[in-house]
Length: 270
Image (cartoon, rainbow, N blue to C red):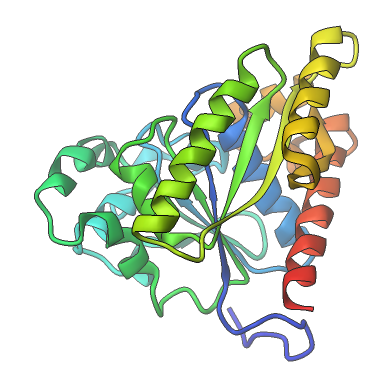
């Protein structure tokens, strides 16, 4: 993938970000796919690790099940290295470690393995220097797969749907992040919260956004991801929305989000 740009102001180590929320249906995988695509479009070298047994990130990037024979599962159990499991996508600068059906049994298998919380960190260590960003798409649960992602990551991004119980759910996740930080990963931080499925016609969306911003302050991105039909349609075509319809409101929002992420990351190393 070429040598790291000498003038990019970043350390030689890639930034590993877990995209997590224990609640399903919040736009987690959609955010992983489209943020990765937007980052890749700016010239960043990006890897998505699909750690969700449902494999929606793999499907959303057009990778068929037959092409997932070596996947995240094999990295976790030590049967494959990152370079064996990662594959190029149709998007320049964006690679993927897909999820296969065998990943669904990993939660049980990991229980008996040594360093069960650190399997993903060990698999990525030293092998992901070719990337600027590694985004881990977590399953919608706080099991061993998500724990592995949180131990491997330097930061967590939380997609948060604008609905009534949103704040309660994210507060629980933040407590989990704090416990992981104390027990396994002292450097772990909350990179940011991104509000998804925002509907400007709905007063509840405004109320939830105000509550979350009041509670978490600057940790909440200025960019909000609108509820958008084109964003919902894109995965069925095996494409990120930025390829499916670059002009739609959802695509523009993810480009803005990528700009915010890059700005925050550069402030960390300034």
